[in-house]
Length: 385
Image (cartoon, rainbow, N blue to C red; front, side, top):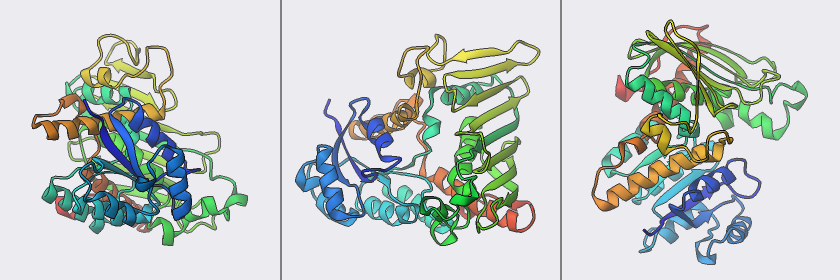
């Protein structure tokens, strides 16, 4: 079976996220890295693309050149990944979707709710995929959590507790470091810093696992380093449309926390706990039972977990493998479309444009609630109210 053709915008030399995408897209041999516009400096982007094996005529200087170069090719790329600075996501994603390309966009999908709604409507009108890289939803045991909730192992879900807290921006002496400062600058980051950067991963995870969406929320946001305009810590209480209560803490000043993404789900019949820094173990406590440790790769797990287990039990699982599961989902969706068949339901789990929209609506809701000293606000996008 011929490989699908894949292109990337951004993620050039020195990028934090670019290598994870290239590893993830290439892991299963489903995609061939065919085209790219990898740097905002045209010549540097062209040169770096060729060092990665791109043909000279498909290593582009910028995304507009790539759009023009790929749009009329018979062998044009099947999927474009957008891994550029946040403020450019909307323009690039929209342009490629309007030209008939499927897109995987880094989060946040857009900078405003109106832009996000436009992308959702464009995806609906064109039938083109706009996936959003909430890559942590690709972890095998996160998908097993979702399967356990869906099949009723926990009963009705009562409470969700999510965290994404680290301490890497805790040094006030680094507040003017350009690599840090932009994150707290409204002109570059928008209405939110820490919640928009990390909190929405935890919020998406809560919805992904429970199958419930955020309906309303109350937020306490603070800049612990006083020179920052935008928040570096937030505590968010939320209510979900299926009745679950949610608590979310996100911080960039939690010294001693390295990554800090964790999710706990508590239902009528049991509770689950998973941490991204120990992704091979899922802790399951059935009501009136004993604590059990579910190991990734063990026998008897769900089809969703089996499909996304890449290495044998006892070996470490990492972020590029989670990204690879998102790419595997997308490859299955694209192949199913080409072959005129239904896709494997165990693969139909990649985050959609609607997830990106709901996240952006939550970002604005947190900002509004924080300014209003924790007032409860509607967290739904206008088009879903």
